[in-house]
Amino acid sequence: MSKRVKEITEETFSDAVDYAHFLNKKLHFNVLSQKIILPLGSILLALHATILFLGVIYLLVRDNPEKLVAFNAFPFIPACWNGIWGAFSNITENLYVKIFLVIVFLFIVPFAVCSITALIVFCLTKSKSPAIEGSTVKRAKNLYNYLEKAPQTQYIVTEGKPVMWRRICGIVSGICIIGFAFYYYGSSINQNNNFLAAFSVLFQSDKSSDDILICLSFGVIFYFAYVLLHIVFSFIIQPCCDSYKEWKKFTDEAERHWLSVDKEECKRRKEDASCEEYDGWKYRNLEKTQYYKDKTEEYYAKYMGLPYETDEDKAEQLVRDIEDELSGGGWGNY
Image (tube, rainbow, N blue to C red; front, top):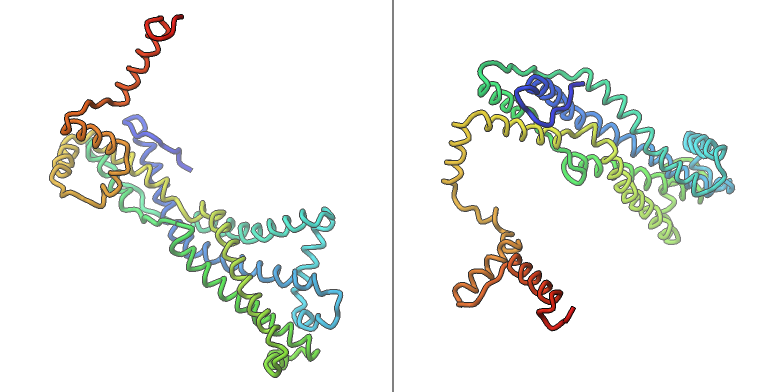
């Protein structure tokens, strides 16, 4: 791993080039990680959460044989839950601690798989080395251009691909929960492990309307629970998918260094800035600033012929008043 460079100078320029190459590789890795690690982690989290959610239902009904027909058809659900719950029961008997451990375990498995996958993908990621040659000005410019050409992938938990995978996995898992809930209630009624028979029995009588609503509510509850879990998970794997802030900060530093050695470019930018059209959107919040309020008061007093005092003038007057009071020159006699 290259040494992180915070300030680019002539002495640290060679380290800055190595660090720029490292950042370029990380950004290419981020592109791949958002296509591989994010969907992989989302799918694993959804699968894990689905099994644990059904395991909780199994825990609540396992003492009633009549309600275990659906779970007998999917023996891996009780097996997974008994293994996990039994392992944590060996650690502690405190119910709240065990629930906390289950939640932690829910995140650990997808995170561990994503971390291993990320390490492999990063090692296999290739990026073009920077060709930095020529004069000081040219080298500084080439470094900045090299950074600018890197893929600028921004990872935002509440936008873009994280939201897309959150919805896809949440909806698919919610539908699976609803399907299992229909099978669970139907098989409990007719004590038959045939899926079509268990599914159809719920729609053959008006008495099952409440059960149908419960089945649908299970899917909705699971979806929103998964959304919250996935938001937390998105923050956990963010280091594997996002280097934008690190790249942006170093690119700004590279631009600062370039302009510090290239006086012509610096002059050209100042001239271009002076010719820019007024951007009202850019200054849309100007009236909310203290500077705007102070200037408004100043010009109002000027045109109205009223005295105007700045905060500094008021502070100086306050100091004079206090000194006058303490000296006995005021109303007090100290």
